[in-house]
Image (cartoon, rainbow, N blue to C red; front, top):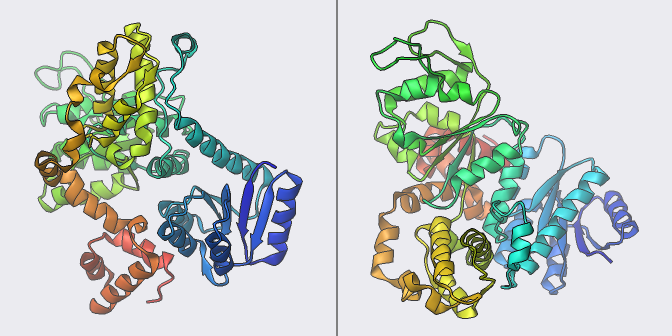
Length: 475
């Protein structure tokens, strides 16, 4: 048998059909008629490789089941089945931890692919627990060695689900995360999985754009339009035509340029400096920041209308300290990469060295881990990185509880204000029943004024409308 499947479906005829289909395809499947029966089966400690649940059940729904699974610390991957027009609710389910969603009527080939993705993920999790690294000969034969590995922890898995969900669309994506988490890599993944993959990917560091030159850099200029314009120049928008424009640290974009940016996004046209003619461009915008843009809006440093235009879909890149189970996987990859580059034969990571890596808080995230592993490979004389090969990590295991680290976390604007805002805007951090009650109280207190209610809840109006729809709140 290929695997154990738990089906949660209150339509007995459809559930029986799924049960027979799984049986014909080599799976062992168990059918539960609702949320309560599924909880009873799972409470008996039965092990399943996958839970396939309908979104709407007679005694609850898939969202409530996901919340219960999280409370019980059951990590079995869940695929939510939804009816036509319920995609937005499915997105909410994914934010609660669902592995993926599947629209009804069920397409058997799509179901097969999604199940295989779950099993491949489970297999990857098992393989990543091994500390043995490929030997140097295998490294040299790996032509795709430069490609970063994908984390397998729940937070990374959820992030990849979001990437797969939004990549095929034309939505503007905002990527948030601490410095060094790999936000540009996420932007590349979105581009490569979109229908623009054959087009250009242009990355721009907004922090390097001065107020004077930013319009020219972004939109281009004609020769002679200003003193230093000695030649015609195509801006980043034109260079990214047909592809993706990635604006890193978008919070540093000069305020005056933000107005021009908003116009270009709304009209899909740019006007180079020194011309009176608009040029049509087809560009998808992906942005990244580790700043609190909502605070910047309140301070008058960032336009609110531009923020909502750019933030049509939010992706958070997790901090490495929140994905300790992936440290071994990333350390192995960086070791392989450094050994190949430095022409060393370092193939192993000792348990003591791994423990040091896992006990450190990694304020610099993946970038810092990569640098530490590269230096360690350089210092290693044999084939194994040991604790003595980690000179820069001496005493690191004590850092997570140190006053220095606590100060760094406390003063980091991203990990305080923006994180709090993110948590208040995403149901991943709230039990559905508690959140629905808070929304109802805020609406009652504001006499049904949704703008005031959103302010009371510390969320924007768009998020409030989505949650009202999600919880079927009647006004």
